Length: 446
Image 1: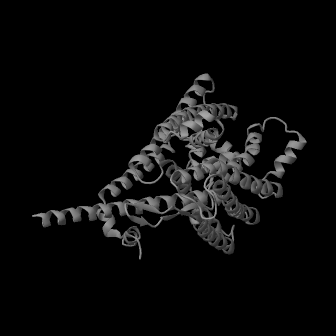
Image 2: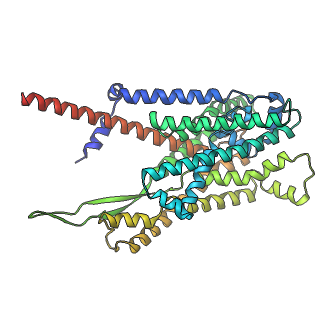
Image 3: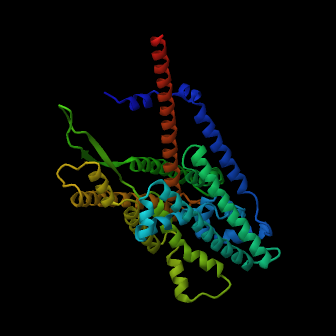
């Protein structure tokens, strides 16, 4: 027999959505906040010559700036006030997660519950400001080194650029928190999602135009579409895939009656690390090309030019290092965000156990063993999803970057947002059932 939650989920329809006023308000708030974000990506940084910067950016778009521009919804290409995007906050969050695993005081804060999380979140905000200041100052120096990009270079431009870019990042961080609290879905993820999706219509129309003029064959365009659909299906399957470990609880005696012990499952995601491994791997591999582009005025040593050419898109060394880094960060980040020992201690605290394994250390070893095996599959999945577009780009010369990282983010955020919408609808229907039962009870009492 299906559970009540499953029955309610199967009965979700447009009528239920129309009656969920709170959900509609949350959706409208989310759309309004994302509209504000999109408008900010078109407000240019003061003191910039747009034409000169556009010419300079076209020469650097193959580096890490191209990836940041994709995540920032084109704000880097236009050097807008949101050019830094939300990436400093994500970097600060990852750094704090790493530090909570190695710094005892932060680890103790993490275990304090809600109050500890508030303190860690505050540290993350401070780290975001620091990273944003460093990145904004670096951008201002890089802009001044360009030929005619800054109309009036000097200390005043650097100060205004740092204040504007850091203020844009802090506003996006606040906006993401507001979406999470008052909207639907994870605000930070939705901001990145909106930035990626905003560039898709232009890229698709440009590709179709190349097909119309004969620059790209119809077979290549159809192959790109088929590959995108296949990759999306693979991502949906693997992102929802779980290994469930059976958890049993002992029998309970209440008075003279003996109750059978309950059973539940401990879900372990196949891809616990999410999209962090490909983001880290891409950033590290594209960094040399970006640094070389900014230092184009100086003569580069022969060995550096050879290494830079070997790290280009589609080159064997680039593919090998990209795959190796994705696999490494998949294991590394999984070890950071999931601690088998803490999970085993929580099970032992609540009298739960895995059949055949003694609570405590033996349970932790078994969970770690299972997690390592499924992470191998998850790492292979990430490598294949991220390398297939790379092979496509190098083999066919598709003019836009159909990145596995961007597809991972778009599909993952969509699945998470849909799940939250369904959760709100289920909660709304539960509230309706409770109100009806109270009304019936009141009528019977009369």
